[in-house]
Every structure is written in structure tokens, then in C-alpha cells.
Amino acid sequence: MISFEHVTVRYDEAAEPILRDVHLTIDEGELALVVGTTGSGKSTLLRAINGLVPHFTGGHLQGRVVVGGRATAENLPRELADVVGVVSQDPLSGFVTDVVEDELAYSMEQVAVAPDIMRKRVEETLDLLSIAELRARPMRTLSGGQQQRVAIAAALTGHPRVLVLDEPTSALDPTGAEEVLAAITRLVHDLGVTVVIAEHRLERVVQYADLVLHVRSDGSVDTGDPATILAGADVAPPVIQLGRLCGWTPLPLSVRDARRQAAALRGQLATLTPPALTPDAAPNAVALRARNVVVRYGDVTAVREVSVDLHPGEVVALMGRNGSGKSSLLWALQGAGTRAAGSVDVAGTDPGRATPAAARALVGLVPQTAADLLYLSTVEGECRQADLDAGLAPGSTRALLDDLVPGIDGGQHPRDLSEGQRLSLALVVQLSASPSIVLLDEPTRGLDYGAKDHLAQVLRGLADDGRTVVVATHDVEFVAAAAERVVVMAEGEVVADGPTAEVVIASPTFAPQVARILFPEPWLTVPQVAAALAHARATAP
Image (cartoon, rainbow, N blue to C red; front, side, top):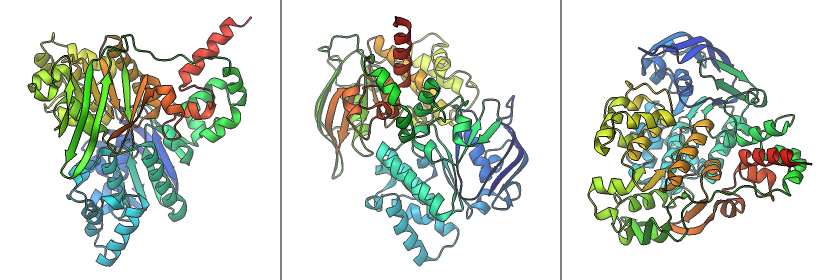
């Protein structure tokens, strides 16, 4: 169905090709998972499938890409629309209508589907992705996760033979991600649709994959079955990492497979205690106090009288299903969001009543769409402006960016960066103002495991310096590694608030892979297990 014949892609002025001599075949009805580090070329590979590379993105493509018998060099993306459906990393940028139902119909209008068939497909797709209640909603009122589902639904209504998805579950809560992946696997197994997914949260997808395409940092691509490729890949989900640590053969791809091999490991760990993340500051010190915060959008109440205290030196994870009010609460705490009622106090000041510059120095927020904070034409320009705005020495913001995601070309336009690179740039721009409270909305979208580990260290470093960090996220693996406290929201209310282990281990939704594999033992991450086993060996008589 899809073939790359010695494909090399080089962008203008780039020193090296982003893809180098790629030769692969994806058969009809396969689910192919594309993995690799942030910025390695995964999105370029996906865009080459429907001809966006090079017809839209520019650059030079050598070799030949054939999809459904059609060469992309000889067919523009619009001429492949009946064969290939595409969902990008940023779904909002691809919407062309204002209402959900209209968006689902739009792609069918472009290929002249009859009106009666259009209506039937819209209804089927709304049910397939469990978004029927959103059909009349304006796009601007949807949460990031809801936008993601609508984008996938819009691609599906055209009944493409190939479906290409770039980070399809990045903005979805765990339950929503499972529902979307279940729908995708039904398309693969029941209808024979060929699906190509690039995803950083491999723990969600790898067990469904028939084929893995590993895009290496030098632009080459290795292909093979998931266990074989991931055994030596530079990115791997926790279940694979735990299998490597314990020497399990074959490497497990799912929690079920891992639990069958983990009995001896659970026995070893039963007498050991995992380390806990604990804040340095006294628990009674309060950096931010919110009382009875209410946020409304018209007749919809997004946040219902939420009261919360945030302490210096802690990393707090804010979790909950899509639409539970997490983003609305963050904006209300930062001061830019409109509060219908309630109060927020940071060092005796309400950020909502301070000037924008003063509010930013109190509370910094990186939104879901990081590009909203970036308005200059180069990365270097953004860093220089951040230094000027914050009164920092020249190069300070750039140095922080290099520490988080090294190697970004300062001359690049921020909108040409990968999602993870763009988010990292927005984060360091906010950190340049040195706010005492740092809020991040889905900061791990587009980040590979290594970058997420590094981000966790950065956030822990901020907490160790006495700052307060709040991360709204669906990434349970990141929460397990970075946060010592979890606040769970539902229907605009706080329904749980406590230490990470206590909240997530008891939850079938928010438990990370290691916790599920080793349950009932209270372990959350592979590094915890590795450190405990190493210590036990070192102290054994």
C-alpha cells in the first residue's frame, strides 16, 4: 500500500538530510508505528506519504514514494485526498469550519460525496469516536483533547484507505486515548485500512502495532516487528525498559505480557521501599492560595468553586479527563483567564488584578498551543527578546533552551520547529521572567522519553529552587517521574488531592505501566526499580 524507494529528503539550507536513503514497505491493513527522538524526522516521513513533502513544505526529495499505486511526485496532496487522510500534531491549525458537524462534512464535500451518504458517515463517525455530544459545538469552545478527536473524525469521514496520524493521543486523557486507539484498530482489522502513527507515548500504542519504523538521528530508518526494533531503539516505553532491565525474553509489549514474567521481580521488591519525592519547603508554607474559584463560558461552568493551596518547592500534577476544567483553572490562577468568582493570592497580590508584566513575574503559564507565546521570526529573536523583557544578560534564555533541547538552529522560524521543540522554546521564554509559580498545560506533547526525563529534571530543579510547579497533563508516566502530588479534577471540581503514589496506584485510569505490572507493590517508574535492585545487590551479604 505504501512504499518508499531510496527516499532522501533535504530541506533548503539544511546541512544534512532529514531522511536518508529510506527504503520500506507498509502492506495494506497494517498498523505501522513511527518512533524516534524529538526532531528526528518522523513528521517529515508522515508528510511524504501524502505529498506534503515536498509539494507544500519545500525542500528536495530524491527517490520515489508510492501510495495506493500513485507516486506522490506526480500527484499533488489534493489529488491523494481520496486515498490518504491526515491528522497533524496541531489539529486546530487544520480546521476550516466553525462547528464540529460541519468540519466532519467538509472533507467529504471536497471529494463530492453524495449528501445522503455524508449524513450517514457523519453519524457513524460521531459514534465511533464518542463525540456525538459535541456535534453542534463551536471549535473555539473545545478542549485540546476534544479538538484532537474531532480532527481524527474529520479525517475518517472520507473513508481513506490510508490514515496518517501525527501524535494522535497527545492531547487525550487515558480513557479517551484508549477509545480512539480502539476505533483505529477496528479500522485496521475490520476494514483493512492502513494506518501510520507517529507517537511519543509508546506505552499507549506499541501493543497494537504490526510494524515499527525507527527514525534514527542520522535520518536512516529501521523497520521490523515491534519487539525486535524496540529492543535496541533509543526510545522505548516503560514496559520495554523494565523488560530490558530484567532481561526478559521475549520483551513484553503490554502490561499483561509483562505481569506474566514479573512474579519473581515482585517477590524481590516486596521487602524494599521505593523512594518518594518530597518537597524541601515546609508543608504549611503557601505560595499560591485559591479560594472558591469559578470559571464560566456562557452557560457552561468549567470550574466550580475550586479551592487549593500550592506550596513552595513542590511539583503538582493536575489531572482529569478532557473537559474537566484543568486548563480553565490554570488560566484563572495565572490571572489572564476570567474568573466569575473566587480569589487568588500570590505573595499578597491577585495576578488577575496586576499588570501583565507583574502577573507574568508572579505566575508564568505555558499553554497547550505553545506557538501562542511566540511571535518573532527566529528562535534567536525570541530568546533575545525574552532576555530584554526580563532584564537578563544576553544569551541567558538561549542557554536555558540548549540545556532543555540542545541543537535547535537559532535561525529557524519557531513555527518550523517540531511540536516538542516549539514547546521547549515557549517554556524557556516564560522561565526567563523568573516567576515563583510556573504553570504548564500539557508540556510533554511532542517530547520523546529522553526529553521528558530531562524536562522532569528541569521542573524538579525549579522546585528545588523554591518555585512551585503545576503541570496539567494526561501523561501518567511523566507524572510518576516528576510530581510528588496529584490533584484530580472532574466536572470542574477537585475530586482527589494527595501524594502521587496514593492517588495513581489506586486508579485504573491514571496508574503508570510499572505500577500496573508490579501491583500491589507501590512502584511507579523503572529508575525506582533499577535503583532499588542495585542497592539490594550492593548491600547483600
